[in-house]
Image (cartoon, rainbow, N blue to C red):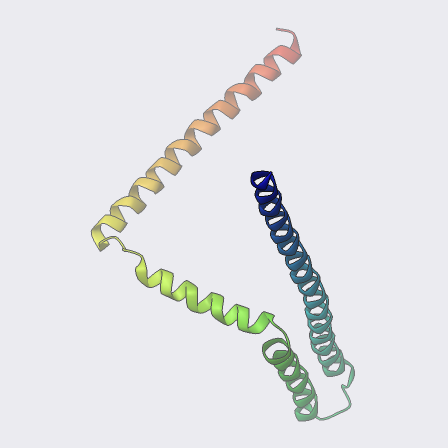
Length: 151
């Protein structure tokens, strides 16, 4: 009997651990959905600011050019601030660019003569394929014309 009780306790602990993992995952997903919605609204606000600045620049033709440029620049500056300070998108973009630079530094680039040789091979292959496809296309056109004319 004690063996069965022990197994039942172990199963109860396992089930409660699984359910708590599911609950925490669901909470994280709901927070992420709210965060995505908030970021979308902020990005739309930034886009509307830029669009408004561009519209003001083009519609206020009676105003001085300096004032028009200041309005456009201010709207773009506010949009950039919204994206990089108020949203999660800006820091993610900066982190992505930094990671990309790190990965590019890890790439082993070919020597100059090897790069030229590979470029030459690609160009020759492209030319040969172009001629081949042109010949196949010409043959198919000739075949279709011959079949449709009834010869």
